[in-house]
Length: 227
Ligand SMILES: [Zn+2]
Image 1 (cartoon, protein in one colour):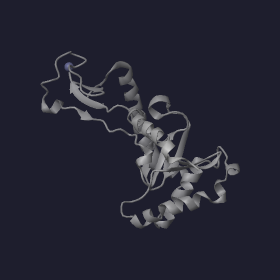
Image 2 (cartoon, rainbow, N blue to C red):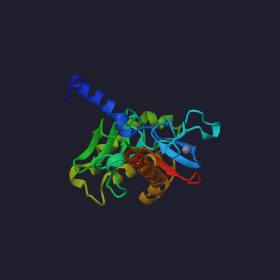
Image 3 (spheres, rainbow, N blue to C red):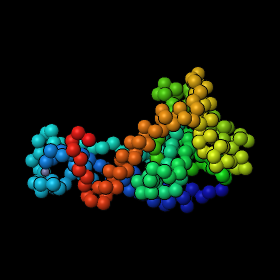
Image 4 (tube, rainbow, N blue to C red):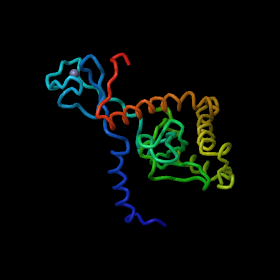
């Protein structure tokens, strides 16, 4: 039995940590015929040192979309995060990834060697794939019950876990296929799902991570406008 009152300060800490976890907002502006990326607009251009105050409209900075979201704020979604650490700090492109499914309250259901976990924290920096079409409200009403019933089935007992063949991915994908069947849609196998929904997002995330780390190191990052 958990004590809600005791949990409160920890939850607030997690919320405060969340901003740092998804990283600083990243922007891009053009100057000196180059595209310059940084955390916020600097006083002067880091290349020519000229004042950035009187900018032409076409030089107005644009913000770069952050590929990470707080998974606990996502309903009925597939989530992806590094098994250890976070994307921005530790992910190196080959790190082991862990996946889960959120219910309508942002609790992340995921399967590991200890069985099905119901995480209320730990997924603050995730890649998220929404699983429900906006018109599937009927299914959303049933979602939490489906997910809970699915998770208590014997298939996901701890001793059934196998690193390569019966893992977090098997669990999430089997559930997704139950949803697709309920929607009257075709079954997806792991490679189809990965190709279609996961790879485009991890590719974008990898670019973002590279950019984020370069700026953290040098303060800014420069490319030709065409890139
Ligand atoms: Zn300049």
